[in-house]
Image 1 (cartoon, one colour):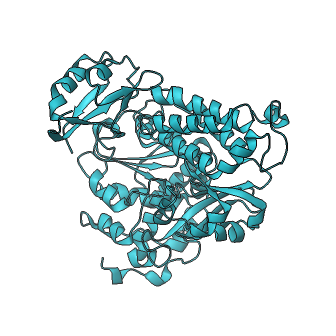
Image 2 (cartoon, rainbow over the protein chains, first blue to last red):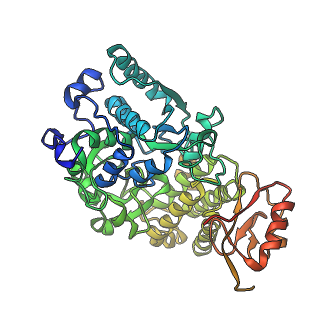
Image 3 (cartoon, helix red, strand yellow):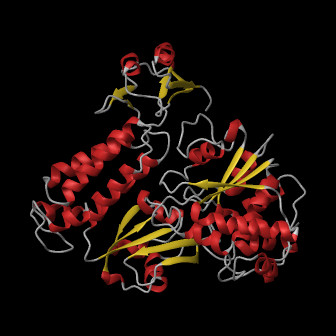
Amino acid sequence: MTVDAFPEESGPQQGRLFAAGGPSLAEHHGRFGSLPEFRRPGALAALLDEAGLVGRGGAGFPTGRKISTATGRGAIAIGNGAEGEPESRKDATLLAQAPHLVLDGLILAGEAIGARELYLYVPTRALATVRAALDERHDARWHRPHVNVIEAPDTFVAGEKSAVVSRVEGGPALPRDQLASTAVSGVRGRPTLVQNVETLAHIGLIARYGPRWFRSVGDPSEPGTMLVTLSGAVRAGGVVEVPTGVSIAELISHDGGTDLRTLRSVLVGGYHGTWLTLASLGDFHLCRPSMARAGASPGAGIVHALAIGDCGLARSADIVTYLAEQSAGQCGPCINGLPRLAQLLTELAYGTATATGAATEIRRIADLVDGRGSCRHPDGTARFVRSALDVFASDILLHNDGQCEALLTTVTGHDSRKESRV
Amino acid sequence: MTTRTAPHMRLHINWTQCDGRGLCTELLPGILGRDDWGYPVPLDHTHEPHIPAGCAAEAAAAVRLCPRLALTLMTAP
């Protein structure tokens, strides 16, 4: 199909992924029509390259390139809907409201790599809608290859690529050591495509309306729309679909209905992400090139606001405590280093540590765990910890004097919040 | 340390196997240090430390002798 052959004018402009208006096959087919076929090998990958689609699961890898790599004998395609990140709701929302678009993408991606097996890996709460969608297709005899639905546990690392592969093989949903990439050697050593469910849904749209339609919105370097989960101290939280590259300040004030002056900081990219100062918000847009300037990334589209009355150090300590608990407990530096980071940050936040010495030690441990595990959990935790030290640096000094930027209360020794939050 | 290099030789550590016995850090003192808990630390700050040609024999010994079989020499780029 040439670019001009796509019915671009019938492609949705606003609210692309949810344009069907509901989860049923009738609504899906009514809005999007039939599923195009790509007979020529490499055709879909080339189309996705042209569209500039990058993965929406957090890593942002070019989807067309990944499909080209995963093509091979006995290939396997997996739609990854595990959403272990506590502040993310976008994949669950997508599976609940547009399961057929995800299935279309999985089918097309599977065909493109010559897959013999298709899997959809989703949390318990999404099982019913996914199975209902598959039943509808079966009853209607409409694009119904066999899809194995696998339940993902609600743990932070369950969606990590090697954990997905392990679970699909029938093992535990734990990350494991990899000598080669999953695309080359994944499930039972076969080429394996693991693609986030939102990425698959975009494939379902690009296949119908073409690369030029896809690129007509968003940041030119990684175009299209993306799902964002807004959470924390915003008046209107939830999942929104926005063009990539949207201003974070605008996202919070417009979509979140929140006055920026009521906030202390914004966390972008989730618990493996980066805090941004309020003053710098105007400089950042929700796309990789812009966020990279702060050593940050949009991750899986998570934007979490911290209220002006909340302490950034306390919130960071609580998050790192959670991350330490979510370690799979397999790699020494993570087993030892993450609880140490949690302990030091908690002491710093709740006023039992000497600030400057503690901050230096926290940074040393963060550098020590970074890159030393079989998955990215220690790396992401290190990044989050460093950004907390950077963005809340002045508060560290205040805490040392028994003050806190948020509450202007005494935080020495026994703080009342300590009992309630730790 | 010698500057002669085998550009494609790297040491892969299987962190799920390693339990910090420290044999590798003794055989490759210029390449691996030890952290607070005894686990190896690549001194070049990479995920898979580069092995210079001059250390190839020691690296091979570390792979062979690791009691946890946690090391692999990677020759691909």
